[in-house]
Image (cartoon, rainbow, N blue to C red; front, side):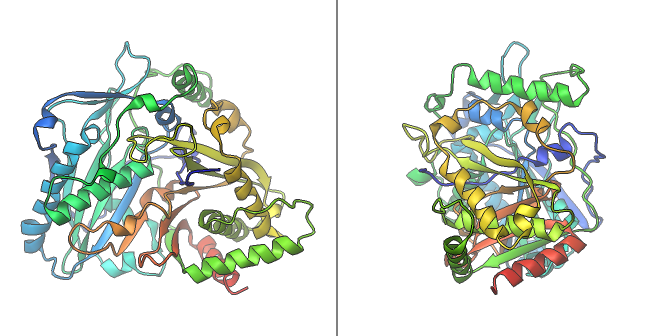
Amino acid sequence: MSGSVLRYPFYQFLYYGYLSIKTTPKKMVSSLNIIHVERVTPSSSDSSESLTLPLTFFDLLCFKIPPVERVIFFRLTEANRSYFDSVIVPNLKTSLSSSLSHYLPLAGQLVWKPLDPKPNIVYSPNDAVSFTVAELKAEFSHLTGKEPFSSTELHPLVPELQNSDDSASVMSFQVTLFPNQGFCIGVTAHHAVSDGKTTTSFLKSWAHICKHQDSSLPQDLLPFYDRTVIRSPPNGDIKVLNSWQTLVKTFTGGKEPVNPKSLKLRPSPVISPEAVRYTLELTPEDIQTLGERLKRESSSSSSSLSKKLRLSTFVIIYSYALTCLIRARGGDPNRPVGFVFGADCRNVVIPPIPSSYFGNCVILNSRIPLTAGTFMGEEGFLASTRLVSELVEELDESVVWKIPDFVEFFRSIPQGTQVISATDSTRFGVYGLDFGWGRPEKVMVVSIDRGEAISLAESRDGNGGAEIGFSLKKHEMDALIDLLHQGLKL
């Protein structure tokens, strides 16, 4: 298989898509002070012309997946309110405006006109992104340190996307000051418009312009907009959209939706006050140790499965996290479990799609249902690695262009199944996002709180290690942390 494997959340859709669960709009903590909310428009003459981009086959695969929320922390002890107001915020706003001139669709709206067969991204002159400026009286080191903390503490730091039945914002931003400690940038992105690679490419462009005070971009950061490179099956995009619509109807008891073209997002689910966040930091030596362990276990395994394992960094760390999460839950070995991850298809299709292609270029890979006992036994880590390795190896064009039956997929998942998804990638380079104040202190994906998902990133020091982010109820997290660290000692 060619191309890198990149991770995106999917199973979270079940948690606040069309199931009957309690949801509520996100509430800000009392210590958060919203200083002001502004509109930032793209700069340059290019922003004076309208632009329309149709959603593609890949975009529509992600059409109903919830927005992705990220927060990027920067330590800066000289960041008092005066410096924040006079230097940080103006520089971020000016460079954001310049960056948007290269990424006009991000300032636009997702719309679905009555006569159009599918939604489009439409940018019109004077369109803008929402830019919230806030201040939080909280301990910066508490949120960026190595100890677990309450998951709800991150939610005030990411903005919501403006949306209605008729339109939805594509991306929104928030910059929050931690007085005399640092600041963070929160980003919320509509998944129907951009995948993780596109979003992080934009963030790299914004950081580059902010740091260098130059509105030009290197060639590798300039987005590629030509939709003709997506050579999906005939009517593939409409068939994917119809599959989503059928799924909506299925989850509403067969009733036709009042407005089948509504773009209004569901409210986020209530996050349990018991949920905590934790980031596992793996050194290159840790990853090598896990890989060597898999080689030993594979050579001595009694299993008849003798296919060679693909021991990439992703396969090793995702399989390890998957195994530990299922073991931490414990319970009946016969209970149903499964996993889902996405793969970047830019280098899988022939001819390849440019690396800088703007939009989604992801397909979903899953193994559901399995049983917990597969992962809880003595060879659980090896079994997990075999399953993940096989899915990665099977990725080719025949898999890429397969039109999914979402209804059949969800019907195949037994009630109560523990499904673990993953988002982001160790290849995104998020710790290289230097806006002029140094490398990030911490980067986290807030939206993994919606379901049992993990986030992946490269290590902050760039030495070839990795970070895995988790969000679980405290009693499960305590068990998970013990398992994660015990496994590294074997």
